[in-house]
Length: 320
Image (cartoon, rainbow, N blue to C red; front, side):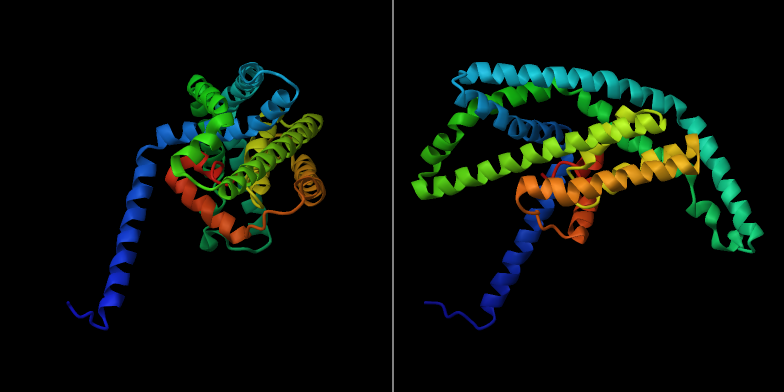
């Protein structure tokens, strides 16, 4: 029998750690490589989970499962069509107007720099011309919104995947139990977990929809261009805890400043502040029963990682 030396255990632990890190790198590289396939699939899973609650409500009211899926999918098709109609046209108009907005923003930037120079500030030594870069700001907005068209182009594949997920959802727990042989107690915990996820996504979707409607209507009253587009962006980014609403507010405030001036930009900022303060601190905690308890730093670092891994849409998918 071979004798185990005192340092062998540490060496084995180090080898296991290195193997785990290598496996993690391979997994991340694989996730990046299959992004065009993985991102639509994850969106399909998210939509299916969000649709599980209305489907369960229909089945509880004696609607056959197949008919319940048909009703839910019909609603989804209508929602996708309306989204493509309004958001797609707004996105196209915004892209055409982008050079004009960049010129206006550049003019505002030069006015700001001239004012700072009159106050005695040396803008050349501070390199403020590069720090305040209007072209980069507007191009960032265009890049973020540009992913909308890519996702909408996969509508048929996404809806088809959602149909299969919903049809299989009622028997998924039983199939998992047959495959793994878990006890009924373990399956009960699994059902509670799935129920909690369904509840969270359903409530978060309703809250995000309410946020989008209020934002779009308010921006329409203020007179900001493309209010439906900014409302839709608020709906998407509201799924990112803590900082998503801040990111959604930036392009709308920037456009209000360019289009209507400082007063409209302040009013737009106030709209986002009030909506997110009231919904985030009163409505959402009351509906969910508790906060999700995520650190803002953790969310920000996750935003960077998933954005690097899955490009634009990696910023939204992982958090639900």
